[in-house]
Picture 1: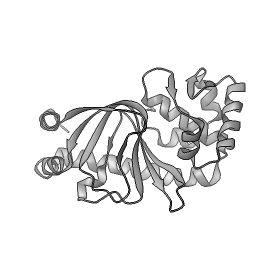
Picture 2 (picture 1 turned 90 degrees about the vertical axis):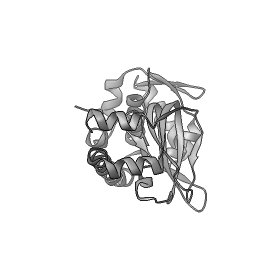
Picture 3 (picture 1 turned 90 degrees about the horizontal axis):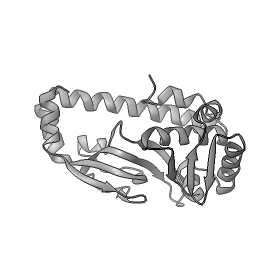
Picture 4 (picture 1 turned 180 degrees about the horizontal axis):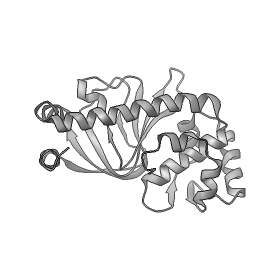
Length: 215
């Protein structure tokens, strides 16, 4: 987008606080707004009929939630939920579609971002099928760390298990292993990244393959 496109979008934005656990939309809901995340983490979470969940996409300050609204589509199988407290600027979906129709730069930016998300989905499918829980957990923590301010964030074992599609005991074992390795400290739902290099050594190749914060 050029500066004029950016100013047109910014004029339509409204600041919003994002509290952990806030559900932005459920499966089947209309997507009324897109959120440009300033801080924190928002996850798209697949919800199965038996109630189990697993994260499919993570969005932080690099991106925007609700891009399916660009076609007027409803949320399909995913719940959009705030994973780590932060803030965003939101825009009415119909207003943003109108801006994209009038401005090729806005339309191109969304198209490029959608392609990035598609790549992330494809990589995640392979990751979830082939990589060990500790590797996936390390990757997931690194991606959270990239998107929050500071080294500490609040995440319960129950919540992490739901995001990873794993048993709580599996996440507990992975967290203990990373703590023994000196990569993190974890107590009462608070995780602190102590040694990022150590965490990267444990993480699977998918972190470097899809992460938008890498050079």
